Image (cartoon, rainbow, N blue to C red):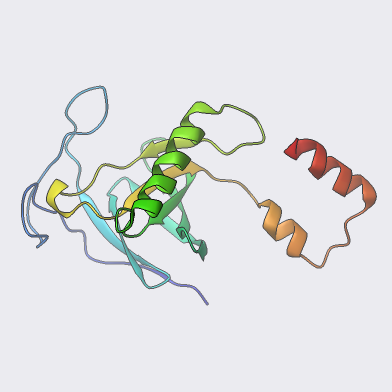
Length: 164
């Protein structure tokens, strides 16, 4: 079964080599905000997240990233956190990541998941992974289609209508 582990709270230095230590970065349009970072292991991948997120459980993993559910302790809101590993390793992956972020920021529709935030890197010099924070949904279309539940004609019509 998938497992989430929290490492001891660590702070990454703002311009350092990635070793544990004190550090801060500026985040958000409202001004400077010091972020303390924690590391979590989700499905064997290390997540570096601000300390106000508490990882609950893994949701899934695929070709484009690993997703876990978490709670934002500032608002008590449940969110999904998608880690896109090595997002800039290839031009195609970087373009896909940018396209997803731009489209989801622009689209505001009840049937399209919205982006809550995109986390800043712990250090600019070690910026490889992108963390996209989005609304947490109970399920997705893939889970419904691949489940053992028999889909009626009405279900299929509803899904097709929602897609259009």
